[in-house]
Image 1 (cartoon, rainbow, N blue to C red):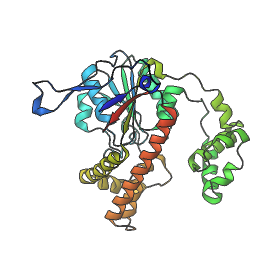
Image 2: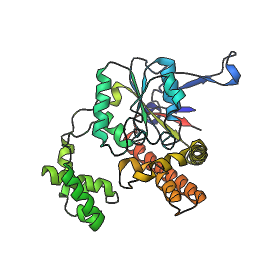
Image 3: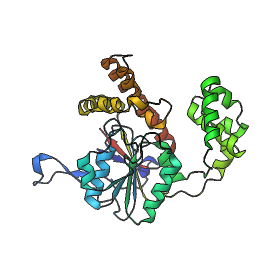
Image 4: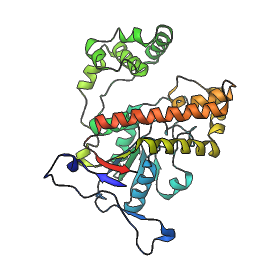
Length: 325
């Protein structure tokens, strides 16, 4: 594992920062496994750790907490749901017993939850005085934490229901056509969920999402005040890990998790967005074979990792890079 820090990217003559993650193999290392040290991570600072799915984020967060103390805090939008321990790759019960893990599996399917809910929960943890090791791959959560989040009023249920109906009957393009020009120019036209959210904000408040975002308050944890780490990895090797991990998930009970929520399955719900869940549900309904569901789920995971890497490159260029082989 090699670390590339921001200082190493600024050209010749730049002062290179020491690695934040070093490995050594002392004579007493048990079973020949290397031990990790974090000499250049300030134990008094909070840590924010990002990386694509299957890159080893959770294991690294746990190692930091064991070595230096702190609580591990989830920043993955899928790991908040109680129904997806296996399929969302939540830390194991054994890992959770080793050091405190917070904001994992604490929401039941059907409950309302958003980045705003999550950020308020993290604010409460920061106020408690604990050292936080925030880890996850949801770019929106991590960006809200380190760059700030606009304080937009909650969408009334009636507005949300109307938006759901219109998106289902008319398509996201109809909602996009009604957005204010500033928001329409900035929003991803290929992201129906974001378009609907922007339409709801305009319908509920009379102000465009872009205007709300222009009034974003200061962030809770700017990168300059914490240790901000970003795991990067070779695309092909990550793809191999993704495939092996999904096979392991099936062996560990992912299909049984999907079977448990089959009676309440709601494709549009946030909790149903777990990678691999729609494919396993399709298999359980007899629409595709398990082999086909497995291959489709692995493909969806690879596509998700690609989107994550794109987000991280655009929004986290100044974070300390941890290169994984």
